[in-house]
Amino acid sequence: MTFRELTMPAQRFFPALLLTGIAALVWGSPPADAVEQQGGHAPATSADGQHAFDFHFGTWRTHILSRRRSASGASQWAKMTGTVIDQPLWNGRANLEKIEASGSGRHFQGLTLFLYEPASGNWSQQYADSSDGIMSEPAYGKFENGRGVLYSWSGSAASRVLDRDTWSNITPSSYHFEIASSADGGKTWQTNFIAQLTRLEKAPDYRTPDTPGSGPEHGFDFNMGTWKTQIRASLSPLSAPGSWSNLQGTHSVYRVWGGWADIGQLEIDGPGGHVEDLALRLYDRDTRQWRVYFANSKSGILEQPMVGEFKDGVGTFIGLQDMDGKTVLTRNVWSDITAKSCRQDWAISTDGGKTWVPTWISTDTRSEERG
Image (cartoon, rainbow, N blue to C red):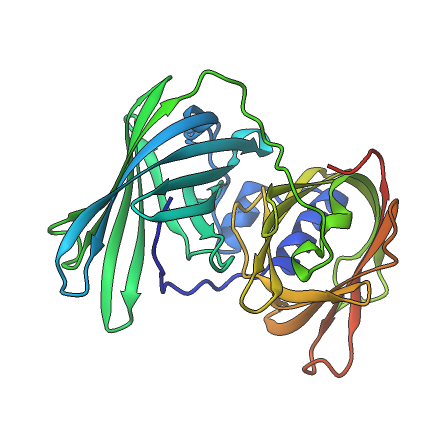
């Protein structure tokens, strides 16, 4: 529920993360001391805060006060009311919040993705609304003594502002949320957003109605539902491009908001354990393109998006990736789309797109009717 544009740069990209997860399936995970020797951190223990947001799951009524500034610079509070639905992902190590609210001449839909990062024990949150379908840069933090605090930066490079998101007064039936900003590095704070939430005594309904259509915002409509997936993955496409592994799993896709947001969850089992990935897909009405953001439960990091669109029944998405110390182009192509099956091809390019090295081929077969 954050309404801001942040400027903190993100430096991580999806496909290397996914291939790392797949490698763990095939070869097993490295021991904790090996992770530390590589400059990382050993996973947090079960006593960490990975279930800190469990209180949040369900359906809530929210009453909002949001500070606005007039053209003259005077501030005033605007009132809004709405509904929040929070859905657990990855057994609570992630959750997706939907909010719809109206008041003071405004109506909006938004979503916030919360991810738990095992290496640091921190949570991140990133927000997008229907106006542009762009995820904000993340806020980071954790819960201590029943109170959650996440921090981020906003403003321009010349005028940085520290933002603080706080969850407090948490009970089974209510909680309080605030956003405050500091222009002096945290010495003083001004509250700009206040929400009081009360649980609605009804089962959460995660289904999202949608109006069928043929515009670009319906590009992923074919993908709604549950699929069985067969995967061939090249774990080291630069150093060993001919080495492939065969895997299988499930791919579940459902709408978050009709016309501009959906999410897919991929689960794969292998000799090294269980891998969970998600793809959050947001439609930008201005550019008429989709941004696809990826995350993996082993890292808890939302990667920079791939951007693209569907033309003549084929979807092409382009992004960047760090691999073996190089920044390379990444391409994801959806093809052979029917009511019961579809195919994805992933490839990387080290020469600016002149040539491409395949990294991933998957074929999905529908296992139930679309959602």
